[in-house]
Every structure is written in structure tokens, then in C-alpha cells.
Length: 194
Image (cartoon, rainbow, N blue to C red; front, side, top):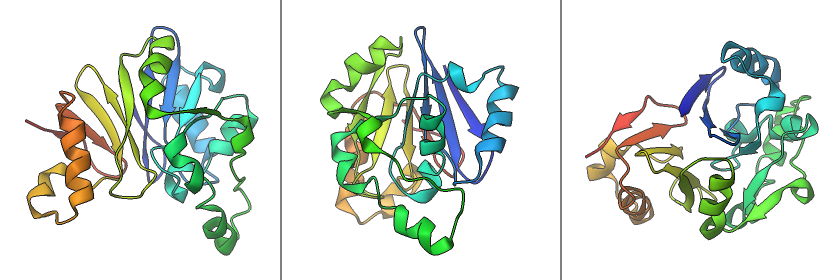
């Protein structure tokens, strides 16, 4: 089951499986108290979150990831993201955000996207993670077999006809080839496709 958590500027998603819960994306550094209130409204605690992952490592999608790992939520990281996980460090430093903690990749479970179906199955979640560059080179999407997909900050599919970036078009081709019928974005309302 996919649940949107809105506690700041970024839509984050909780995917509940029969064997664990996956949090997809977080908001800006400093939003941990608001996050705790959002999951409490879902009758959850931090200890109920089995894993956290980010669709990409921009500041508004990974800001409290290190806070969550410090609280015991393990991080899942995909190999295509490794070169980019510290992308936000200089942005937060420039902002002088006192709440930000860099991600410690040595504490993460690192997988290839091709291994994601087995990983998600261990949580009782039917789906996979695929590399979907376009917004950023490290962008991934979580594709669920029920037709839902969390695509982070990919440009809206409804505007694809005007999209000139072939990388974005190819990412959507890969997403739709997996039977996706609903797209869930980082900053927009969900959109039905097909």
C-alpha cells in the first residue's frame, strides 16, 4: 500500500509491505519533528520504518536521511547514486543549515537496480527500482507491480509531448513498459497515465 506523507515541501511516500515498510524520499533538513507528526498520524513510529531511500540526492529529497539512519532506519542506496550522494552537502553548507547531517554511505546497503526486486520482495513489496535519469543523473523510480510508480522529480508525464530531453522520454518509456498506470511525483499531485 502506498501512502503519501506531506509534512513539508516535498511529497514523501511510505510503501507498506507484508514484511516491512519502505520510506521513499524525505524533506529538507530540519523537518524531522514534522515527519514524526506525519507518521504518528498514520499510527506509525520511526521503528516501524524498515528502510529509507531517496529518488535522488537533491536537498529537498534527502534532508533528514542521516537523521533517520541515526535513529536506526537503514538506508538503501543504489550503485547509480553513489557518485551523487554528497551533492547536497555544499548546498546545505552554503545555507548554513544547522540541522543537516551528511549521509554516511558506509552505513548503507548498496544494491544494483537489477537486485531491487529481490530486496523489495523481502519486505513483502512486489515491484522494482529502475534508473530513470532526466531530472538528475542519479534519479531512480520505484515501480510497483500494482501500477503505481514513485518518480521523484521527473518532469510531468502530461507535458511529455513538449519535452525535448531524450533522456526524460527514454526514462518514461522504461517506466511505462512496466505497466505503470499512476505516477507519484515529488512536488505535484499524482497523475494517471494510459
